[in-house]
Image (cartoon, helix red, strand yellow):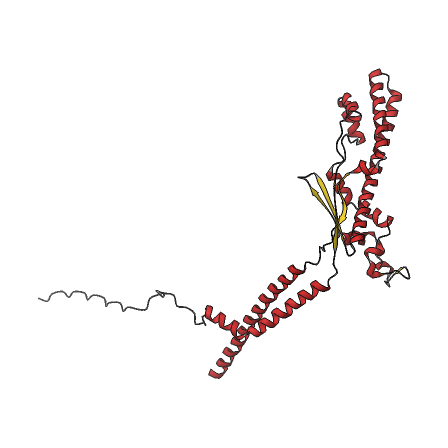
Length: 321
């Protein structure tokens, strides 16, 4: 009797290559180490030195030939506040009515603060008044002005500088810094001539005093008109007395406003100019020119090395093909 045949086991699987590399194979590229970099610098040091010398020379030449600039500076502060015994006390006595009066008329019960002085100094109104009052357009744009013929050296009348052009130019020359911590304003003006720089700064500060005086006199006049109109209508003796005190205070403030120099601001440091030039900073320009040109020379050296290597590889491929 024949025995049943057992099934044969399946053949063993032939081992194949792994589906992934068990380790990282670096790409076939030239490795660049520190020695290679040093070798490049040694081979091309002449080019680096040439670029560095040329760049530094140009920077030094600019520093020596650039027009020197001088800075005139002044430090001013708002006028010191005084005890509010006149207008403030009179309006305060009216209570809510007095506050409504001050709000409707825009009456300022305090003195001019530093923020308002800063806003006026930077305003187009003040700059335009200074430029027009002292005829500064030929001074600011002296390259386009013929002093002998007293005319502009431009062909198109639209190219003649105006007040707006002057304001744009003054952005780099005329600066106002509000030192809130010290409670003062630092005003400066830069120009080629130190005496002219100081004179320009005085023009702006003098005009600031005039503008503050004019604004204050307008407010005083409005307050006086209001008090006179209310005095004609008032019947209560208390209100009449307060309105009379208000009028008296306005007269006193008008008299104080006539002293332009002390009314608008307090001069902590009057305009003065230093003998030292603020521009150009020759040492800084020279150091910066040396640094930038050196880095640029190194960059050109490595760039030239990369181009030479690329050409060599291209020639090798052509020869192998």
